[in-house]
Image 1: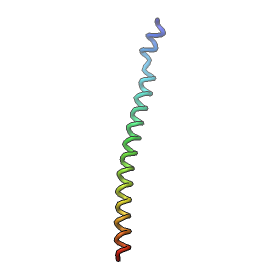
Image 2 (image 1 turned 30 degrees about the vertical axis):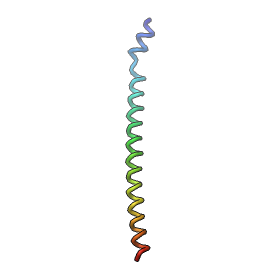
Image 3 (image 1 turned 60 degrees about the vertical axis):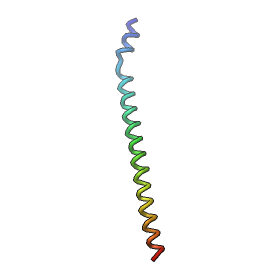
Image 4 (image 1 turned 30 degrees about the horizontal axis):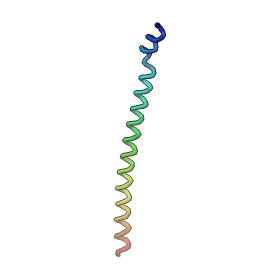
Length: 55
């Protein structure tokens, strides 16, 4: 019985899970930001290329 109570009170697993969730949220934010930035950069280069080919 004491082993079960000790396992329930152990917070190391919860802390690792919290760090994992934080890392996953940060990774999702980075992927979203890079995707949006990549689209903007691509559009900018396409606009420059179209202006150069018209002249």
